[in-house]
Structures are given as structure tokens and as C-alpha cells.
Length: 540
Image (cartoon, rainbow, N blue to C red; front, side):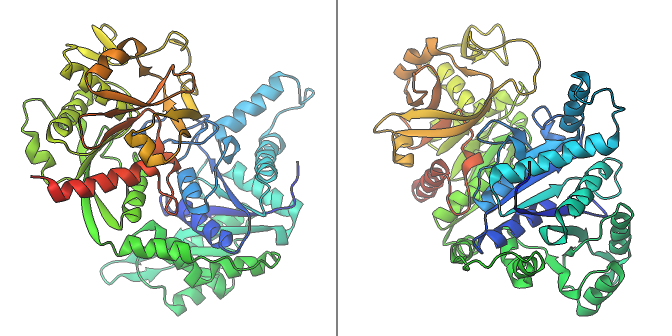
């Protein structure tokens, strides 16, 4: 399958976590602002089939798409910056590639050939890239190759994109390499040798980069640019300074100042488009950088020690702040550090709101329930996401006198399993890809906080969970003050719960953070931050 669109391939060198994902998203934003249809694809070299069963302490957040793919967190950056909805084909791994090739071999599709890295693995990689280009109907597909050039895992992917360059031609492909600029102590002298070695490693694989994105914490002097250009075989104007920014939303504006968009348009001979007004992104960034107010939100989670475990939650809170012209400061609280005996007032003193995000397993659950009790008793605005909603239901059940109420995920013998697996759900088998995943509809109850936030009667949101509210307890919990403000169309599944006796206490079974974007903040986060700011003006 072949599309007429063009492709940009982004690789990284020297070390991991240098910002390839942000560079990819920022370039996409620059091209989107020029009126081109842009989409992105992330290739991950690990052998897992997908990110669904990976430990958040190692991998960070698992991002979920509309069609239920459990993917790398960089897809969240793509969606937030490009304003697109990624799909199943927007992320694939070495594991998925090898699995597909082995299945084809077992089915006899290779007609008895000896199955090899080249051409069978590389062909599978190329077909997936071409398929994504075709399915997205993109003018430009930006493909980010995960890992670092020089890793054992990356050569098959680099070989595949080398072959694509041959098949599609120089004008239809562009290679962008992201590298850090090293500084040596004690004077902070810039050293270009790591950059040169990284480019040479790429050259040994048959790739000559067209653009170098130089990650640096200081300005890149002209003489350093000229040296990099000379030793790495690129024009000086293709050596791009990508200095550190305070907020990632500033990165596209930095790319604009460096002329990356115009450089790519010229290099790839893209058809002229009318310049689309990029003022909205600039205005959003200005509001982000110049808030009128500040509010602190306590995030009580299980994985707060990993900076990327709740990346979309962190970004969605920021978006809610932008909509309210406020800076959101996050107070990270590890839930397994909270106990019933503790004086929680000192832990939550000064916060304007509390959020409990998603997660799995029993660890830290009782701490979350303690925090929710504190929010209920002290009328602190509360937003619960997935597990955060389930813990809110458990806490309310115990408050209503259902002693020992719990989720059957945490206590199979709980006397009151107010959260459970439904009879229609599988209780055994593989863990990967077996949850309620992706977009599901929800009908909102009139005159509720949820309906007021969305301003419409029917919504669709992304899910990633196995356990549901036990319908056998719905009536009892309604009597105790919970309102089921969002239900599935057939009313069999609770999607949103809120407290009728609290200023703003809302929990969603879905993950609204996955659909929040800087230019279109999610309504639940907007209203949550609004309620938190109001609470700060009346809190004792």
C-alpha cells in the first residue's frame, strides 16, 4: 500500500530521554500551522507486543487511543500538539513485528523461504509505515524511531527507513537526528565529539541525516554550529538549536524561531500552503506563562516517584489551569504513605483540590481512601480518575455503614464488593489487551456537575480498566449521597459518579486526561480547577 504523502524520520543519538518525542510533536505543530495534514507514528524497539502490561515505574504512562491501543506516552504528545487522534497503527514494537512475521511463517505465507531479518522483518516494518501513511491520508507522516542509534535493537528499523529513502526518493523523505550537545566541566566548554560519533554511527547504517536537532541548555554559538555542520555533513542552516524550555508548549515556538518549518518545506519541496494563523498557540502559551492566579492540587497516586507515570494527568491539569488563567502546582503524594492514624491536615494544608488517578493492585489503596475521606469531610474539590472513582465509591460505601466494603480486585472475600468484575467479563487468561479499552459512549444525567461541565447529554471517553461499579449496590449508595451522573446507554455501567452533598466531588470510570489538549482543555479538568480556585477563596 503506497500513499503520495511524504515522510520524516526522527532518530536520536548519544543517550535516551533527549526529547525526540517533543521534537517530533513540535515539528508536527510547525507543519500543521502551515496548513499541511500531519500525523505521527512511534516505533518502539522493545520486544513487548505493546505497552499494556509494562510497569509504569520503568516505562511511564500507558497512553490509550480511541480504538483501544495501549501505546507509548509519546502518542499523547502527538495528539496534544497536532490536534489529531492517533490509532492502533500509530505505534508498533519489535515484539509486534516479530510476532506478525512468525505468524505469517507458520501460516505458510512465505512459501517455504528462509525467513530472515532482511527482507522479511524490514518489509514488515516498511509495510506498517506505509499503511499508517495511507490510512491517515497525511501530507506528511513523522516517524519517530525509539531508542538510541548504536543500540542492539535499532538496526532493523534504520535499515527499513534507509530502504524507504531509496523507494520514495530524496524529496519525499527527510532524516532528522536529535542529539545532545555535551558540556565539559569545570568551564562548561561545549564538546561536539559525541555528536560527531553519533552521526558516524548513523552513517555506518546507511543514513546521512538532513537536519540535526541539537539539544542544549545554553545558546549554541555560530562557530559550534559551523563545526557541527562541517564534521557531520549538513548545511549550517540545518543545525538547529533546541534549548531547554520551562514548559514543553514553548518548544514549537522555539522551532519557529529557528526556522525548522520553513527549512523542511523547502527541503521536501512541499506545495505552497496559505500560512495558517498560529496565534492561538502563541496566545495559549502566553496565558500559560503569565497566569493571574495560582492553585495547588494534591495528586495522591501509586507511582508518583516516576515523573512520566502520570504525564497526561499532569498535562490535563495544566490545560485546566490555562482555561482559568491560573498556574497549577502539583503536590505529589504517594498514597501508601497515608494512614488512618495520621493527621492528614498537615499533608493537605493549602491545597485547592485533590486528584486520585488510575492504577492497579492493592498497594496504596487504603491511603487513597484516607485521602478521599479527608476531601469529603473537609469539602475539598475532588476529581477521581478510573481507580480514583472506584476508591471514591468504596469510601462512600464505608461511610454509609457497609463495613469492609472494597473492590474484589483488592479483596476477593470482601463482604460488600461494591467494585467487581461483571459476569460477562473474563476472569482468567492473558492480561495484555483484555481490559475495557478505548472509546465508549456515556449518557449524562441532567442537572448534574458532569452535565454542566460537558454542556451536552451524550459524550464519548477513553477507558482502560477491568473492574466496574457493582450494580447491586447502586440504590444503596444513591441513598448515601452518590449520584450516578453518567451511565452507559443501556444503563448497565456506571461511567461518572458525583457526591450530592459536596461542593465538587466527581469521579469518572474513564480517563478524561487522554483527550485533553492545550487548545481544547478537557471540560472536567476545567471545572475541577475552577472549583479548586473558588475553594481557595472560601477555605477556612
